[in-house]
Length: 364
Image 1 (tube, one colour):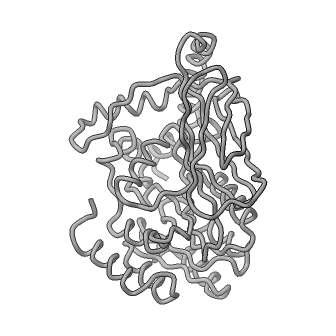
Image 2: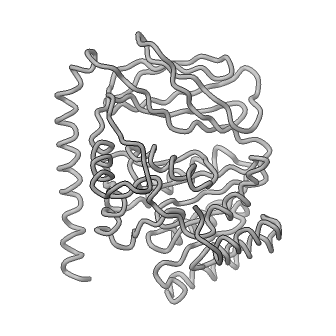
Image 3: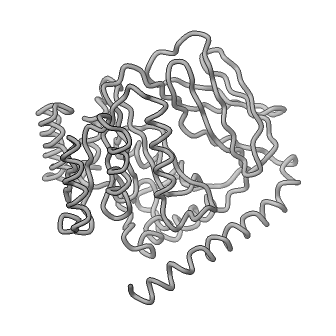
């Protein structure tokens, strides 16, 4: 391995610990003063079944973020990124939530995170719902989106970085520059991604859920959500990561944990797995196919690194084929769309939409 790359990888844990220590030191100074200022609730995306829903989020001190614009300078985006990364979290705050008339409450932990679990008295219908959140002793309510999965034909589990959004994950320095100096409108999706995901999700009906797994920290949730919304890529629950625990070193364990939760939470649901060749997705998804026999419909891998020439990847593809699952390696979304059409996961008309997106002008 290149000595420079080796040194860089060895320095990552030290860098992350230093950032985490600085963040906690600042929080230790700010926390006792939180009562003198306003607090904000940052809900993420709730998800679950008609009988049980969980909604996570974070309690923060206010921060000033400039609205994203396609003409924003890199420095302005960098300042916003720093404000996200060094957000001030608030522990010990009681958060209440109301969903379909059911009220529950909890207390945020030391890092400001909270999880509300709703168990409705009567089953919730499938689709999108809205929960209302509030902080004890403070005025105002915050709306949160909740997706209830019911009667879906299948689900989609997708990576985000260099699968949906161009992130340069094969080069950590370039990835950091891209992530820290872009915004929701300047970051670019891969051609055809929006059309393919809309087709898989059956967007008009809203039946098939799309779950996003990323190694990005929760601090960037709002940017990623705005990106998906702006690029007309189906919205769905996100599973990001917290500072610490080797955030900069990869997300194999994180992704394994999320996929296990989803497969076990929805035991009757089959899945399409989408990722890229820049990290560990091929290996992770192959293990999922072996562990959950018969529950993976297809594996689509965006080929960023010439994986079709990698002997290990070819061996894994052969193993999956013997298990009855196709691993499709492709440089764009079109091959995946062709395979999905052949399997009946999308229609010929939806395939043509992906074709136009890939071969025509780049999606907005």
